[in-house]
Amino acid sequence: MLRHPGARRLEELLRIEQRLGALRLDLDMMDRVGFAGSDRLRYESEAQDLSRDEASRGTERAALVARLRAESPDAIAEWVDAHVSALRARLAQFERESAAGENRTTHAFVAREAIDEWEAFRRAERDDVRPNVYYIAGYADDVLDAPSR
Image (cartoon, rainbow, N blue to C red):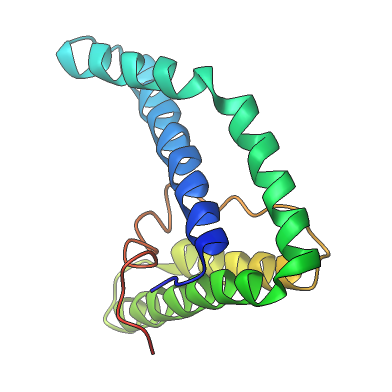
């Protein structure tokens, strides 16, 4: 569970961006297969709504990261720890599934890459992290409200 308000806000902003990314991916796939219908209209409407504030959310997120790095590095550490822990759990799941014969090689690769990106973010080598919305979708579902360790 994220306790620091800054870490919680960073996660909320990330969730919105992930939702927008997932909608865009779904709409792209719908374009590829020629899908039209009520789901498409609903997805388009939600994507338009989320797109309106995309730039201001990005600005808010960048400013919050800069402020937290300077004033509350523990908030950044808490946020990164939560994601890395969730990703390690998902990676272990992918490895078990691969051992059982399921093809999870790409999923595991993407999870490892995401862990590396979060660790680079922790070290301030990256300004942002944008986890893959397909191969590791849902890995952080409990980051906001998971029981603390």
